[in-house]
Length: 127
Image 1: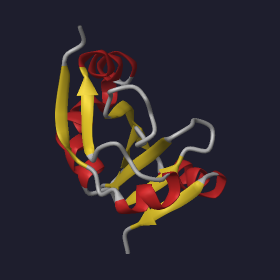
Image 2 (image 1 turned 45 degrees about the horizontal axis):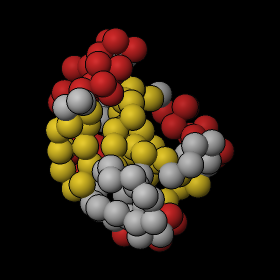
Image 3 (image 1 turned 135 degrees about the horizontal axis):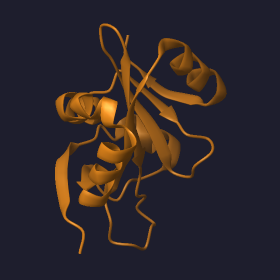
Image 4 (image 1 turned 60 degrees about the vertical axis):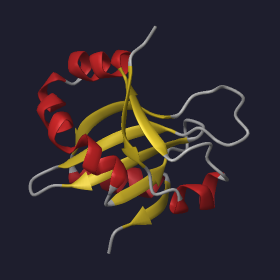
């Protein structure tokens, strides 16, 4: 059975305005997804360890992923880069007993962030 770690609580207001009521405000990370981040994004893993919780609990930008259902990009602006946590949301009407979950994490250049904002719906942007 997968080990699950609760990382914190989401600000549900901008998410529920777009997706409807969430089943929970908790955000979790499974050991399988942690292994994915370590293996697929090894150069970004130290950023994940340092910024993942802050990025999901206090993101600078939230963008709806228009290609994947009930998924958002939660982005934190750093001095010389951006970090992006991809989160799968669990809605109140979902039948499975699961929680909002981190899918992956990686750094994001400014030009790629602009492209994400252009091609998807921005749900929240810190002013």
